Image (cartoon, rainbow, N blue to C red; front, side, top):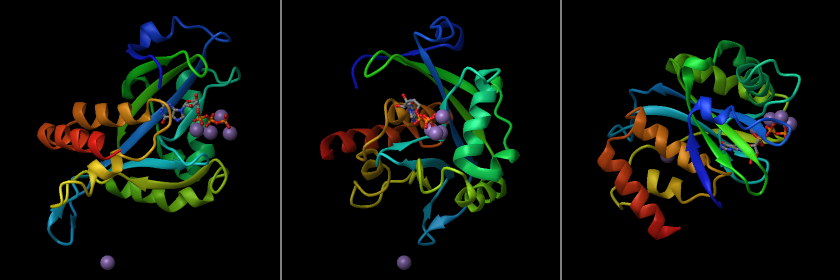
Length: 199
Ligand code: GTP
Ligand code: MN
Ligand code: MN
Ligand code: MN
Ligand code: MN
Ligand code: MN
């Protein structure tokens, strides 16, 4: 991935376009009371997407010069990638987590947001995502991240983390799972360790 570093919003905004491109992506999640096989708690529904390039990432994209703010750029991208359900979402500066700054393959500041929804809102988003302009084109589908570890010690989150992710999306996922306590620390640490061994 080359050198990537995390930065605050203030620090990230000092990297100016057009030398630096800015992109915004969001992790959407909802508390999810269900159990897999009636047994394993699902904990939360966390959304990611399969991209056109076969890599996993979050909904969002480049902020264009016509976008009045980072959040308006994100909102436009969410309409393109998630479809009409995006109207349910109001992602604001309050949902900002941090930025990842990378110089290769191009100079990009990747702003990252995390937003909690109700399970009903998230399900509506999922249902309407197939109506998105980019569905079947830049976005091959939305998916939920398995947050548990199965008895074999690999299935679930460790196997998921062994997939290929775009740019710093894998770090963003792990960070959000940690900061928002979507997975117990011990489970997350174990999943990360196992994933490194199997990938
Ligand atoms: P186009 O407008 O068609 O180019 O696509 P887009 O605006 O949706 O851009 P996209 O989301 O594919 O990528 C914007 C930039 O962010 C690129 O540099 C990607 O490599 C990077 N990127 C894409 N998804 C993610 C993500 O989930 N996390 C991070 N950190 N970077 C991402
Ligand atoms: Mn079955
Ligand atoms: Mn897009
Ligand atoms: Mn995108
Ligand atoms: Mn775009
Ligand atoms: Mn596009």
